[in-house]
Amino acid sequence: MEILFWALAVIAFVIAEVLTIQLVSIWFAAGALVTLLATYFFNLSWIQQLGVFIIASAIFLVMSLPLIKKRKINRAVATNADLDVGKHATVIEEINCDKGTGRVTLNGVNWSAVPENENEVISEGAIVIVKKVMGAKLLVASEK
View 1 (cartoon, rainbow, N blue to C red):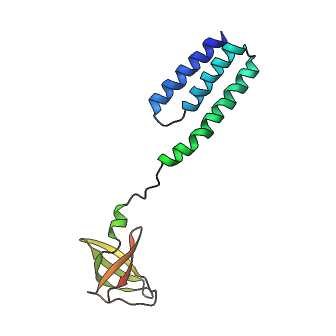
View 2: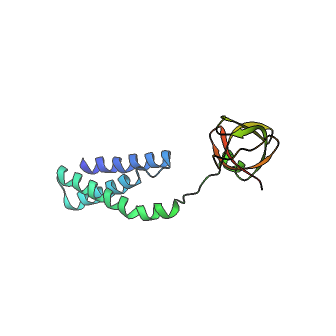
View 3: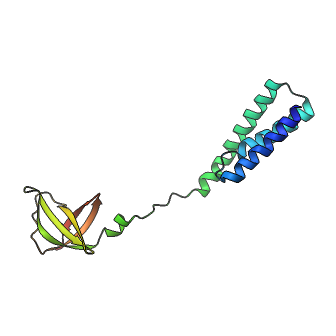
């Protein structure tokens, strides 16, 4: 009866892994297979079977972590906001932190803008360079 339980557990974990494709149950499938074999050959009690299952699953998990880390490459995904950094914008309203004013147009879109140097005042009509996108506001610097 116990052999049947572990055989069904292996099948269930493999099916779950195939359906999710997220490496969430493969370690449990391997642990259940080891427990199935250990129970068949050594006639283990339920407590021993549970211990073998937990330890085997943990060992498979620990063994696979380096492989997972190698395959997982942290790639920075550029967003549309990142694409605007470094572009030129035209000031359509004087940028002045003291007055709380500042608007630019970039690719036909009207943006709120603040200067990179807080003391700087950038006059209307000037061309600026986008340094950073901060939500709906651009951090800009004068083109010199």
